[in-house]
Image (cartoon, rainbow, N blue to C red; front, side, top):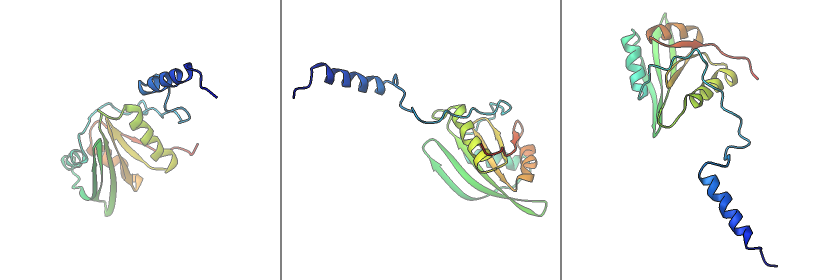
Length: 154
């Protein structure tokens, strides 16, 4: 059986269009959850070290216990001694060159809704504060941030 000459041409066109982004490659993937509207667009930080430094300027000596640097961002865990408690700050900074505001919002939503985290956020970064009752204290040390309480599971 012979293949009609137009079939390879049509397949080639579909492949070309998908490569140009004109065919939805993310079909079947749920839409992104936008960044909450009350999250300020700044400050933006280049790395977790910048967030740790900002916490230091705000009065919290944050000891980094784990760090990962990847091509389009970084994350770390740092500990603060506060009111007789060890507060763990899981910090994520995402590159604005690679990730949209809605992609950052989607990550925040996953933490709040799926895992019940209390988040401090602004710009291109966010912190999961444990225990969550200290999130407001961490936010006070980082001007221009908001605290996002956990959300009910969908």
